[in-house]
Image (cartoon, rainbow, N blue to C red; front, top):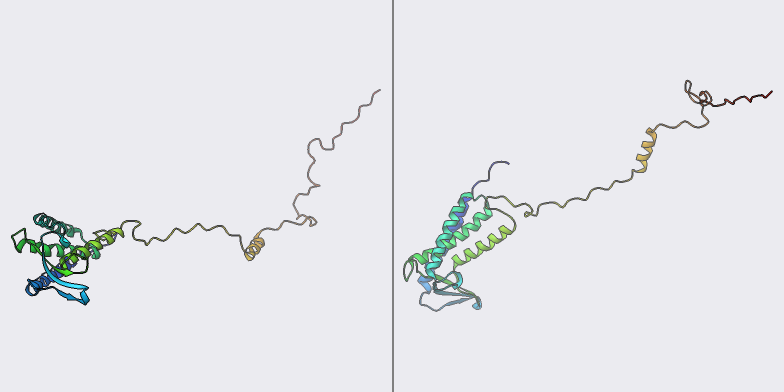
Length: 230
Protein backbone atom coordinates (compact mmCIF):
# COMPACT_ATOMS: atom_id res chain seq x y z
CA UNK A 1 0.00 0.00 0.00
CA UNK A 2 2.92 2.38 0.58
CA UNK A 3 3.20 5.17 3.15
CA UNK A 4 0.07 7.31 3.78
CA UNK A 5 -0.25 10.55 1.88
CA UNK A 6 0.72 13.70 3.80
CA UNK A 7 -2.04 15.91 5.10
CA UNK A 8 -2.74 19.11 3.19
CA UNK A 9 -4.19 21.17 6.04
CA UNK A 10 -1.40 23.72 5.66
CA UNK A 11 -2.31 24.31 2.02
CA UNK A 12 -5.97 24.72 2.95
CA UNK A 13 -5.14 27.30 5.63
CA UNK A 14 -2.77 29.21 3.33
CA UNK A 15 -5.34 29.44 0.52
CA UNK A 16 -8.09 30.41 2.96
CA UNK A 17 -5.96 33.15 4.54
CA UNK A 18 -5.00 34.52 1.11
CA UNK A 19 -8.64 34.66 -0.03
CA UNK A 20 -9.73 36.18 3.29
CA UNK A 21 -6.98 38.80 3.30
CA UNK A 22 -7.76 39.86 -0.28
CA UNK A 23 -11.45 40.19 0.57
CA UNK A 24 -10.91 42.20 3.76
CA UNK A 25 -8.37 44.57 2.21
CA UNK A 26 -10.48 45.17 -0.90
CA UNK A 27 -13.62 45.91 1.17
CA UNK A 28 -11.72 48.28 3.41
CA UNK A 29 -10.43 50.24 0.43
CA UNK A 30 -13.84 50.29 -1.26
CA UNK A 31 -15.64 51.55 1.85
CA UNK A 32 -13.01 54.25 2.35
CA UNK A 33 -12.98 55.47 -1.27
CA UNK A 34 -16.33 54.64 -2.87
CA UNK A 35 -18.90 54.93 -0.09
CA UNK A 36 -21.51 57.60 -0.93
CA UNK A 37 -19.68 58.38 -4.16
CA UNK A 38 -20.42 57.91 -7.83
CA UNK A 39 -19.45 54.57 -9.37
CA UNK A 40 -16.12 54.32 -11.19
CA UNK A 41 -16.37 52.95 -14.73
CA UNK A 42 -13.35 51.20 -16.20
CA UNK A 43 -12.54 49.51 -19.52
CA UNK A 44 -15.18 51.46 -21.38
CA UNK A 45 -17.93 50.43 -18.99
CA UNK A 46 -17.03 46.73 -19.02
CA UNK A 47 -16.08 46.93 -15.31
CA UNK A 48 -17.75 49.21 -12.77
CA UNK A 49 -16.62 49.73 -9.19
CA UNK A 50 -19.72 50.41 -7.12
CA UNK A 51 -20.04 50.18 -3.32
CA UNK A 52 -23.29 48.49 -2.33
CA UNK A 53 -24.61 46.59 0.72
CA UNK A 54 -26.12 43.11 0.40
CA UNK A 55 -28.32 41.56 3.08
CA UNK A 56 -28.69 38.26 1.23
CA UNK A 57 -26.38 35.58 -0.08
CA UNK A 58 -23.82 35.80 -2.85
CA UNK A 59 -24.84 37.93 -5.85
CA UNK A 60 -27.69 39.53 -3.83
CA UNK A 61 -29.68 36.29 -3.66
CA UNK A 62 -32.23 35.93 -0.89
CA UNK A 63 -32.18 39.45 0.54
CA UNK A 64 -34.02 39.69 3.82
CA UNK A 65 -32.77 36.34 5.15
CA UNK A 66 -29.55 37.61 6.67
CA UNK A 67 -29.73 35.55 9.86
CA UNK A 68 -30.43 32.36 7.90
CA UNK A 69 -27.41 32.88 5.67
CA UNK A 70 -25.28 33.71 8.70
CA UNK A 71 -26.15 30.39 10.32
CA UNK A 72 -25.51 28.57 7.02
CA UNK A 73 -22.10 30.23 6.68
CA UNK A 74 -21.19 29.12 10.20
CA UNK A 75 -22.21 25.56 9.34
CA UNK A 76 -20.12 25.61 6.17
CA UNK A 77 -17.05 26.77 8.08
CA UNK A 78 -17.47 24.03 10.70
CA UNK A 79 -18.02 21.36 8.03
CA UNK A 80 -14.87 22.36 6.14
CA UNK A 81 -12.79 22.31 9.31
CA UNK A 82 -14.08 18.83 10.19
CA UNK A 83 -13.34 17.58 6.68
CA UNK A 84 -9.78 18.84 6.94
CA UNK A 85 -8.93 15.97 9.29
CA UNK A 86 -8.90 13.55 6.31
CA UNK A 87 -7.60 16.03 3.75
CA UNK A 88 -4.71 14.51 1.80
CA UNK A 89 -5.39 15.86 -1.70
CA UNK A 90 -3.68 19.03 -2.91
CA UNK A 91 -6.47 20.04 -5.36
CA UNK A 92 -9.10 19.50 -2.68
CA UNK A 93 -7.03 21.56 -0.25
CA UNK A 94 -7.08 24.50 -2.68
CA UNK A 95 -10.81 23.98 -3.31
CA UNK A 96 -11.75 23.90 0.38
CA UNK A 97 -9.40 26.80 1.09
CA UNK A 98 -11.26 28.99 -1.41
CA UNK A 99 -14.62 27.98 0.06
CA UNK A 100 -13.42 28.57 3.62
CA UNK A 101 -11.83 31.94 2.90
CA UNK A 102 -14.89 33.19 1.00
CA UNK A 103 -17.33 31.98 3.64
CA UNK A 104 -15.38 33.61 6.48
CA UNK A 105 -15.01 36.84 4.50
CA UNK A 106 -18.75 37.32 4.12
CA UNK A 107 -19.39 35.95 7.62
CA UNK A 108 -17.25 38.71 9.15
CA UNK A 109 -19.44 41.31 7.44
CA UNK A 110 -22.60 39.68 8.77
CA UNK A 111 -21.21 39.56 12.30
CA UNK A 112 -19.65 43.03 12.62
CA UNK A 113 -21.15 45.41 10.06
CA UNK A 114 -24.31 47.50 10.33
CA UNK A 115 -27.13 47.31 11.03
CA UNK A 116 -26.60 44.73 13.82
CA UNK A 117 -24.61 41.62 14.78
CA UNK A 118 -25.75 38.54 12.81
CA UNK A 119 -27.69 40.92 10.56
CA UNK A 120 -24.81 42.81 9.01
CA UNK A 121 -24.88 43.61 5.29
CA UNK A 122 -22.07 42.37 3.09
CA UNK A 123 -20.04 44.90 1.09
CA UNK A 124 -20.20 44.26 -2.69
CA UNK A 125 -18.26 46.35 -5.17
CA UNK A 126 -17.54 44.53 -8.48
CA UNK A 127 -20.08 44.94 -11.27
CA UNK A 128 -20.17 43.68 -14.86
CA UNK A 129 -22.85 44.54 -17.43
CA UNK A 130 -26.06 42.55 -16.85
CA UNK A 131 -24.52 40.81 -13.81
CA UNK A 132 -25.18 41.22 -10.07
CA UNK A 133 -22.68 43.14 -7.96
CA UNK A 134 -20.31 40.87 -6.01
CA UNK A 135 -17.03 40.85 -4.08
CA UNK A 136 -13.85 38.77 -3.88
CA UNK A 137 -15.35 36.47 -1.24
CA UNK A 138 -18.16 35.59 -3.65
CA UNK A 139 -15.59 34.94 -6.38
CA UNK A 140 -13.64 32.59 -4.09
CA UNK A 141 -16.81 30.67 -3.23
CA UNK A 142 -17.82 30.30 -6.88
CA UNK A 143 -14.31 29.22 -7.97
CA UNK A 144 -14.14 26.71 -5.11
CA UNK A 145 -17.54 25.31 -6.04
CA UNK A 146 -16.59 24.87 -9.70
CA UNK A 147 -13.32 23.18 -8.71
CA UNK A 148 -15.23 20.83 -6.37
CA UNK A 149 -17.53 19.76 -9.22
CA UNK A 150 -14.55 19.10 -11.51
CA UNK A 151 -12.69 17.05 -8.87
CA UNK A 152 -15.80 15.03 -8.04
CA UNK A 153 -16.40 14.35 -11.75
CA UNK A 154 -12.84 13.05 -12.10
CA UNK A 155 -13.33 10.74 -9.12
CA UNK A 156 -10.69 12.38 -6.90
CA UNK A 157 -11.44 11.93 -3.20
CA UNK A 158 -10.62 14.12 -0.20
CA UNK A 159 -8.07 11.57 1.03
CA UNK A 160 -6.18 11.61 -2.28
CA UNK A 161 -7.55 8.33 -3.61
CA UNK A 162 -9.38 8.02 -6.91
CA UNK A 163 -12.53 6.10 -7.70
CA UNK A 164 -12.07 3.15 -10.04
CA UNK A 165 -12.84 3.92 -13.66
CA UNK A 166 -12.74 7.71 -13.12
CA UNK A 167 -9.08 8.50 -13.67
CA UNK A 168 -9.12 7.86 -17.42
CA UNK A 169 -5.72 6.17 -17.15
CA UNK A 170 -6.91 2.66 -17.82
CA UNK A 171 -5.69 1.31 -21.10
CA UNK A 172 -8.28 -0.37 -23.33
CA UNK A 173 -8.32 -4.11 -23.29
CA UNK A 174 -6.23 -5.49 -26.11
CA UNK A 175 -7.95 -8.05 -28.35
CA UNK A 176 -6.76 -11.59 -28.03
CA UNK A 177 -4.05 -12.42 -30.52
CA UNK A 178 -5.22 -14.72 -33.30
CA UNK A 179 -3.13 -17.82 -33.98
CA UNK A 180 -0.90 -17.17 -36.94
CA UNK A 181 0.36 -19.71 -39.44
CA UNK A 182 4.01 -20.65 -39.09
CA UNK A 183 6.32 -18.99 -41.53
CA UNK A 184 7.99 -20.89 -44.32
CA UNK A 185 11.44 -21.08 -42.62
CA UNK A 186 9.84 -22.31 -39.40
CA UNK A 187 7.92 -24.96 -41.30
CA UNK A 188 11.14 -26.16 -42.95
CA UNK A 189 12.94 -26.38 -39.60
CA UNK A 190 10.05 -28.39 -38.15
CA UNK A 191 10.15 -30.70 -41.13
CA UNK A 192 13.87 -31.31 -40.63
CA UNK A 193 13.36 -32.45 -37.05
CA UNK A 194 10.52 -34.86 -37.89
CA UNK A 195 11.55 -38.55 -38.49
CA UNK A 196 11.45 -39.61 -42.12
CA UNK A 197 9.36 -42.61 -43.09
CA UNK A 198 11.34 -45.33 -44.96
CA UNK A 199 10.79 -45.50 -48.66
CA UNK A 200 8.81 -48.40 -50.09
CA UNK A 201 11.78 -49.79 -52.11
CA UNK A 202 14.32 -49.56 -49.29
CA UNK A 203 15.08 -52.86 -47.49
CA UNK A 204 13.98 -53.03 -43.88
CA UNK A 205 16.78 -52.93 -41.30
CA UNK A 206 18.22 -56.16 -40.01
CA UNK A 207 16.25 -57.77 -37.22
CA UNK A 208 13.04 -56.12 -38.28
CA UNK A 209 10.25 -58.53 -39.12
CA UNK A 210 9.25 -58.79 -42.72
CA UNK A 211 5.81 -59.20 -44.03
CA UNK A 212 6.72 -62.56 -45.61
CA UNK A 213 8.18 -63.87 -42.31
CA UNK A 214 5.01 -63.34 -40.32
CA UNK A 215 3.34 -66.62 -39.37
CA UNK A 216 0.14 -67.22 -41.18
CA UNK A 217 -2.97 -66.63 -39.21
CA UNK A 218 -5.14 -69.47 -38.04
CA UNK A 219 -6.79 -71.25 -40.89
CA UNK A 220 -4.64 -69.58 -43.47
CA UNK A 221 -3.69 -72.09 -46.20
CA UNK A 222 -5.40 -75.04 -44.44
CA UNK A 223 -7.69 -76.48 -47.05
CA UNK A 224 -9.61 -79.56 -45.88
CA UNK A 225 -8.83 -82.68 -47.91
CA UNK A 226 -11.51 -84.01 -50.07
CA UNK A 227 -13.07 -87.18 -48.74
CA UNK A 228 -12.94 -90.10 -51.14
CA UNK A 229 -16.05 -92.12 -51.42
CA UNK A 230 -15.76 -95.87 -51.91
